[in-house]
Image (cartoon, rainbow, N blue to C red; front, side, top):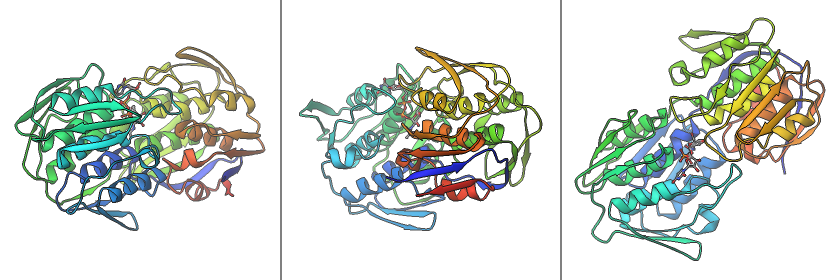
Length: 417
Ligand code: UD1
């Protein structure tokens, strides 16, 4: 198993290119399966989750090729194939392929996704929505058997929680359904806007993305198109946390501040000066690091749950006490015992975590337990005295592209073995 060795305590200087967003490219790859033609996705990050999505597409008969940061998907000759455990469990969000499979093939068999390292991952909202579109779904022997013999039919769907994945699944499915679909209580994340733009470029008719109510007029066929995957806002927030913790001055090339309007004030309050430049976001730690304001994770436009663990890592070395409240996932604090091994002072109780800033962290062997928790350990390691060895970095490689290379580009002493 690979690990990252980081010699910390060195401020970061230079330019860090922000990659295309994992959470944008994954649903768009799922949508490609609903397209009868060739799609080119520019700025697609090379991540293990993206490889897993490509494997699913290939299993369904699509041709997927990569040239640099361009992914080409030709699903013209796609044909239904069962997604058993080996493929479905490689990628956390494989359920987002269900809508595309049902829309295109009128049937789908998918291994039940089950839980993940952040806790149980129910898919009731996905299934209820697809049932509203006319799918007949039975569950048994760990498999979801889905059928819509006459195709899907548009419907009025209300989500009791603005699930990102369920909104995406239903947008894809409804794009090829007969008639009009309305999704009320929809997720509003920037990734929803990117998926809608992609589907519209492919001939779909979607309005309201980014708002509570999304309307989808079904079309008979989606055609090939091109899309540019936008910058990863969670990678950006992770690197802002790294600059806060380790100090320095970094240009986050390509970062889009408007995707982070709730997040950025946390860093300015901590003492990171932020300047919007034509090339991206310039971040500079100007003096002492102060504890961030109360951080409560919420659906967009609230503070993103994925940006919380890296921010918490920075808060461990800030002056003062920080309070965190996690409202999206049951097990989002798994990095806390690892941060405490490095000398952090953190107390957790249920959804709440209290972080009392310490003057320094000390490097030691730690284990990444999930993707963003792994990002948090990297932030901690970059500011810690001495050497931190992070194991189980396959979690980190799900969502941070060429991370060791990009950190070395900032002068960090990072080695991957
Ligand atoms: C997406 C992101 C993930 C991010 C999350 C929240 C991708 C690939 N992943 O995940 O990085 O952390 O949004 O911003 O885009 N829920 C249900 N029933 C459902 C679906 C969800 O109860 O049918 C619950 C989940 O258990 C969780 C909450 O809703 O507690 C949020 O989940 P959701 O918004 O669906 O997140 P994902 O799409 O899985």
